[in-house]
Amino acid sequence: MARLQKSGQTALKAYLLDGNGQIRTAKDGARDLVELISEIKIIESISMPAIFAEVAIFDATDFINTLIGNEYWRLDLEAFGTQITYILQCYEIGSRSKQEKKEAYILRLASPAFITNEITNVFGAYDQQNATFHVKEILEKVTTLGGKSGKTFDGESANKMRFTAPNWRPFDTINFIASKATRSGSKSDMAQGAYVFYENSKGYHFKTLDKLVENAVNQDKPTYVYGQKAVSDDPGRNQYLINRLTFPKSYNSIENLRQGSWSGYVIGLDPSTLGESVLPTKNKKVTAETGYYNIENTFKQFSILEKGGRLPINTKDPVVRGMINNPKRVHYRVLPTHLWDTPSKDGSSAKSRNLNYYLDTASYNFLRKKSLEAIQLQIEVPGNLALTAGEGVKVEIPRMQTKRKKTELDKMYSGTYLIGGVTHTYKVSQLQTTLHLLRDSIKVSPK
Image 1 (cartoon, rainbow, N blue to C red):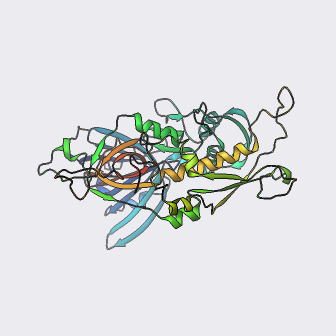
Image 2 (tube, rainbow, N blue to C red):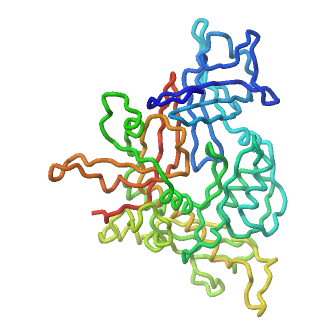
Image 3 (cartoon, rainbow, N blue to C red):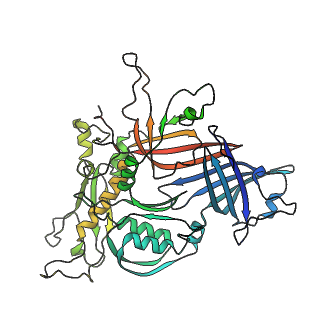
């Protein structure tokens, strides 16, 4: 492909692949199917284990009758100097309509590993190993890692753990591991958890949200500005202008209260004995206490996007403090049995993690994810394939009113963000990228 410089300009080639991964050739020698495609959406997110895509087909050549389902597609895209090849598998043909001799329909595609995940089971006991080691081992069951044609895997070191998988799907097993894993070598007083497993155009990732935040702060990242477009198409300027800006979610105190986004309880239930359960009771037979969590205390343990940043809520306001310190949500967790724990040398305690540790992990995971959703933006920018889920970006949004005839930046919404999700939309040689941005802190105290 030729190197494209005009902002938003995109080159696309689309092929069907045979069972050997080779490009299929039609009887007339045609291979590239780009003329049939009216729109493509490619979606990746830190909350999804695979890349998904929707391909809108406008068919006047009876192409539909050559499809039997589960075809492999190869999509070659280039935008602003970045080239990416996506290999995706069709799992659904939908929204089909016909008028005279023309048909329109949508092909829904996903990473081949997502399809393989549906027909693969994970069963058995997994020995004491780094949680990331388990993830990689399970991921190898559904995809090829390493090599020229294989996907890469970027995993962050975690605590050692053992578990039994009762015939789960691989991705469900990885999600289970993510809910229990804690960060290895964390400097925080409370062990940082909140692992996420996702795929972007660079490969598969198993990392904590704190690690993603740290990378976003330290990496060289593009800066997108909400401003007026240049009269001439100057790619150096227009490429980093925000075309559209929306606020998908703003402050909602009732929702935060009901979801326990600020404070709440975590109750652990031991299925083998009630005496080991962590229950809200004054019964002397139950010695452990209910796990209480609070955003103010836990926020100190987070790695945050703004250095020295604050919570985006006014904790000095007595009304706000009353809501923050009023727990309205209870989370229940099943605790692991400790029949195989190895006692310490003095025989007084077990080497493995105690029961309250699991409750701390559960509350940390919940609060870490909720805090990252405190400030959200959705911006549409000229197509940029270099933007991927899980990386950082800077946003500059000017205030509506000037101060001393100078334009100042909005201190609430300007700053560093984590890219939670990316949607690349292709239409007739043009690419638009939509970013769902997440932020957990602000530079100044909210009023």
